[in-house]
Every structure is written in C-alpha cells, then in structure tokens.
Amino acid sequence: MTRPLAEPPADTEKHDGTRRRAWLHGAAGRNLGLVVALLLLCVFGVISGGERFANIDNVMTILRLAAVIGVLAIGMTFVITSGGIDLSVGSVMGLTTVWATTLATQSMAENSHWIVIVSTALVVGIAAGAINGVIIAYGRVVPFIATLAMLASARGLAEMISNRQTQRVESGAFIDFFRSEPLGIPILVWIFAAVAVAGWFLLNRTTFGRRTVAIGGNAEASRLAGIKVQRHTLYIYALAGLTAGIAGVMMLGRTTAGTSTHGMLYELDAIAAVVVGGTLLIGGRGTIVGTVFGVLIFTILTNVFTINNMSTSAQLVAKGAIIVAAVLLQQRFANRSKST
Image 1 (cartoon, helix red, strand yellow):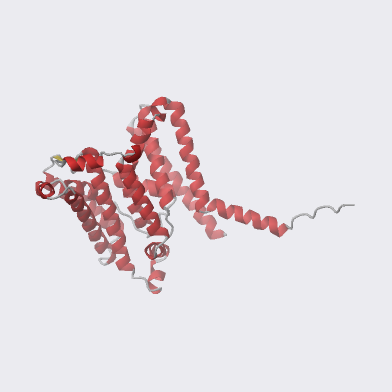
Image 2 (cartoon, one colour):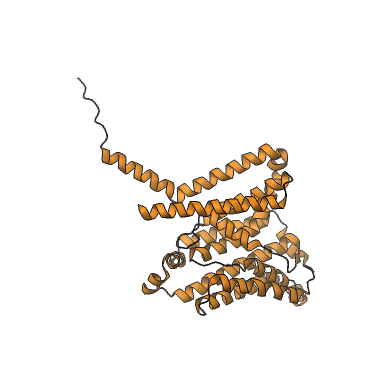
C-alpha cells in the first residue's frame, strides 16, 4: 500500500512565487522584456519590409547607425545612474569633429600620424565634459542648466571654428581604417562593442561603478560613507565627454567630414535609449546591457519607418510614446519595489 504524496508546504509555494516576482522585476526580467520588444520589432520589419529589411546590407546599416548613438548612450548611462543628466553630448560631439578637422590638426596629422586627429577629438571631448563636471560638482549648478549652457556654447564654438563650413578629412589612411570591415563587420560596430564591454565592466565590476550607483541612490549618504562625491561627479562627466569624443571620431570615419551640425539632437536619442533600457532617471540603478538594447530598439524602429516611407514626424511621435511608456513602467516598478 503506497502512501499519498504529501502536498508542498504553503510556505514553499509562497517562497517560489516571491522568487518568481523578484526575477521578473530584476535585471533579467527587464532584459527579457527588451529582447521580446526587439524581436517583435524585427518580426514587424520582416512582415512590412520583406527582403528590404531582412537583407544583410540593411542589418549592417542598422548596426552602423546604432554605433555612434550607442557610444554616446554608454557615457550617458553613467551620468543618469549617478542622478544627473547631460544635454550637451550631441553638441560636444559636433565640436570634436570640427576641432579634429581644422587645418592645423590635419597638418600635424599629415606630418606624423592620423592618430593625431583621434587624440584631438578625445581631448576636446574630455575637456568639455570636465568643464561640465566642475560647474556641476564644485559650482553646485543643476546638471540640466550646466549642460544646457554647454550645449549652446559647444555648438556656437564649433560654428565659429568652422565658419559654418564643412571640413573634409584629408587623411586617406584615417578614412581607410574607419571604412574597414574586419570579419565582414564594420569597424564602427567593433568600436561600439568594445566601448559597451568596457562600460559594462566599469559599471559592474569596479569601485568606480559601485560609487556611481551609490551617489545616484543617495549622494549625502555616499558622502558620509567616505566617497568624494564632487570629485567622482567630475570624473563621470569627463567620462561622458570622452564617449562624445569617441562618437565624434566615429562620425568622422562614417562621413569623412567635420561640421558643426553633427550630433544635432543626438543627446535626446541617447537619453531615450538609456531610459528605455531600464536605467532609472532618478539615479541609483543603471544597466549597460539595457542601454545597448535600447539603442537597437530605436535604430530598428527608425529603419522600419524609413523602409515603409513613414514621415519623420510619425517617427518622433512613436519615439515619444515609447519614452513615456518606459518612464511610466519605471515609476510603477519603483513604487512596487518600495511597497514590498
């Protein structure tokens, strides 16, 4: 005679349910939602665009377009995770393309190596980001205002330097390098992947990343815990400037020209990708993986709209609706986390 199987204790079922909810509301659950959204967009693209969307050339075009915004968004992830915002990254990117293609810079590059063009762009980006950091951290100016001022100043300075003219890159070696395709994949995509991996490591596996999250969660508590909040804030904005410089170099490689109009409104695309990816706008939580998914979602969305001959106005409306939906979901999950 066999004994009937005992029913699982109620506590075990309750514990399993709690673990399931925690998993769904955690990083894995959020990334799963982004993957599902990305797949749905791809399915819609295949249905509506057919071969024009699914062919390998279009896939490479999507990745190439996502690369520049993606690098900007990686830097923006650190800024937003720390509880700040940077509206100037697009303008700083435009400034780096202009400064790196001035006659003086290109003459030095011609006499030495095209790496001078890259170095100039990176230095200009870091300097602009550091100025933002000093004003915000030590001048105690609200990040929105400080970076808004840099947005206008960097764009104006780029126009003054270039005299509103397009400056072509003269170095053939520079152009050849940034048009190369190792293993059949554009070098711009490789650079984006390298920056994303470095950003993930920096945010998740270093003291710098843990301090960034801590400052975004509670700046005063971080200060009392011994973190140099002002200095760390300066580093974060300098990092955002560095990614703007890298994005500027990538833009030069893609277009072979520097102009003050490069990066117009790119800051909004970068912020949107970061928010949709799951980084909290109020700070204290950031995800590089989510940011990469956010960039791909927006780039594929734009590509699908373009293939289907939809107007740019419709694209902007759709992007705005997605951003609002993402922020509402963030608020809902944040409130639920506080109540549990």
